[in-house]
Image (cartoon, rainbow, N blue to C red; front, side):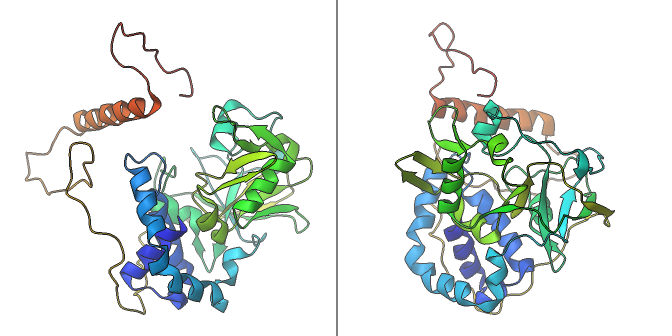
Length: 329
């Protein structure tokens, strides 16, 4: 994800000073999330291409990390500036937040996160990673309604936060509070056990770019952080927090202009094939010729389901001994 982020920045002409601005770095991160999303049909090819760009982007990476303005990338959450997004009209009540169970449920082992809506993102100069992810449909962040209803939370000053600034931090968390993944025997956190020592677990912005899909191995096993998608804190138990309704988030903020010149960075696109269809090309329909969107979405869903079943080795043919996926597959 970090390679995709910096490659996109270089392609657009952003320099280190620009990347210190959350108005630039948050949208770039949202785009990088989707570029390397594990469920993309060309995921392995894209990851190889992004990692192959490391020599090209190295100077921009080094300049950015050395810039004083990016120190916030690795800072803990500002406990007075936490933003929570309502789901289906709920009102936040941190005093009623629950501790996760131990051992974690199957979904919690698979998703590597607690099964709750107890997460917030930090407001940096009015920009919030979570809100911009919703606006750009990054990863799993799809709004159920628009505009977004937001709440500002002031968490207790003494809250104990475990910091994730890199894949080694994630591995130490998994080793300290171990549970096993569903099928691949990877180490994942036992959130109930972790909640005995920590109020929350924070993925910093720098951690977001460096943790995702990075495998770490030790004598205790292996871990690989995936799919958190934004700077955020998962809260693991009830807290005495102050909540204040914020204005609804409508989005639509423009990207600041780059300070540098755009530089060709991404490899050229290969012509699409049947096995690798490439990007969708959109066109404007004339009035009266709009497609049946329900039928189109059903067709796309069937195609993605077919591809997923092929990846999982599930036999679709009748009478061939294939089995239907169980709940959760």
